[in-house]
Image (cartoon, rainbow, N blue to C red; front, side):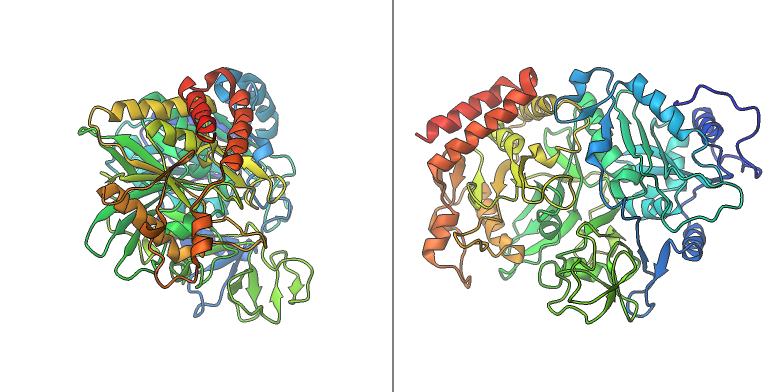
Length: 613
């Protein structure tokens, strides 16, 4: 608890409600946070429709939310954040493990006592003039062996409503806590206390920001931001950073992946979990509309997957979330028609543009740009404007059960058996369209060393190539080398049943000499999935390469595709010199991670170099 002082007066000016729980530990914790932050009132969130409507009405009155046209976009709203608060703040995100070694070189580490001292000053009276909301929430459906419980305290009604879309929130979660479940502590404040009579702003936040995680104590403390994963603490903070540490300790996996069910025209079914960095095609894969006749893709999740080994030795998976928090720019009927259908209503849009008739717009939504818009900062915009109408990291928040391709089992507590795991970066060169790992260990190597050109969702120079192990670089809650070792240990446990998911690596983003994408992507990615499933059935061979097994040109279904043989051959091949240079560059990462790198991955790196000669 980041407080050492004991105030003499009550922190709550209104009579606090009787906590709707018998759990003394939860009641005492909420009381302690209120004592430190001194809110005007406390509200225990129940997750009801009436509560949601009241909060939305309050935010409309405060101009935090702008109602969209009720016929064009029913029950939907636009939020405009402070320009200082538009994305994850990776540079201000910390893993405060007791040992710096446990955080590893890819995380920002601060000694937990030092961080608690810093937070003590920041959180003192931080909620004055505001409501302290208590949000019990579930990650995962009731009854699953991997479902976990959290309680987020926040002073942001935007966070409350968004958490209601992204998690199973309120009474359903409190009932699980009442039954004795342990729970993760998550505390969030926008860091903007109000003096008596002071007028609030539509998007309160603070220039100072900290998103701090205490993995051993299962705690999250977030200060200063109201945006996305900085504030919706069930998402990246709990479901990945804290959950990955829990999963390591308990023998399962919490990963930055999407999850789909693929059904072939012949009725073959495969469940695929795939890891892609943000804004690199993960949502498009999760909601794919196949271009090959008779194929079906059903959505189980678009961002986070929890996996465990069941009593039969099979790797099972589920999506612990209940909503989508997707990137808007580039989403259209052409690129992701399922997402567009999902967003018909009941959606919160953040930092997109507003049309003159009360709907939303963003770059890529339509071929023709509207003649006039109000941009994400509230200013007038025309096609001649020098700035984008929507922020490059603008988002939509919507419930999964509104998705027309959502599989009926998306919320099944038993999850689904994983048949294949796919890793995929955004690379303009070097890596082929698809390759299959030689073994589980080689697959772990491919996941550990995958690289992607940086996107708007992450800090840094756009287009810069960075290693993004398992697409978890910003999200692993412990030492990255130990994460790789944990994946290898999962493989050892799977040897008992002998049922390994196949592991593949894809790259939709190869470019030709003129800078044009060589692969059409989107719905045509089903052609790559078809090859994967043919491999799973054992019906086709492949071509050995330094990065794994490549398709034979005739085994990838290219019918009705505007791609000549030379282009197809190029995208399915690798240049040994490029692969060797890449493998030597990987050694920089392995050296950085140091003595926690499993020796097996150094062996795979050496084998890759040897195969290039």
